[in-house]
Amino acid sequence: MSKSAKIAAGGVVVGLVLLIWLPVWAVVLIVLGVPAAAYLALDPSQRRRLRRVTRKEVGR
Image (tube, rainbow, N blue to C red):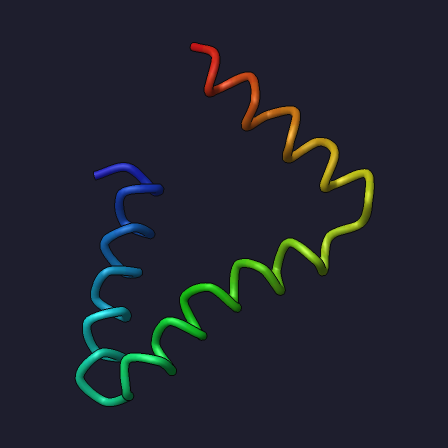
């Protein structure tokens, strides 16, 4: 199993646990808020590099 597959599987497990323990609105807030906060925490040069890499992979 690749590293990204392990991360994705872990994310699914965490999401299911959150759905059981928290109301749906809180889970949606966490699922959308954590990646947004992580993106905003990047430097502008890191954001540009991230956008460039994702555009290249989309074109494959």
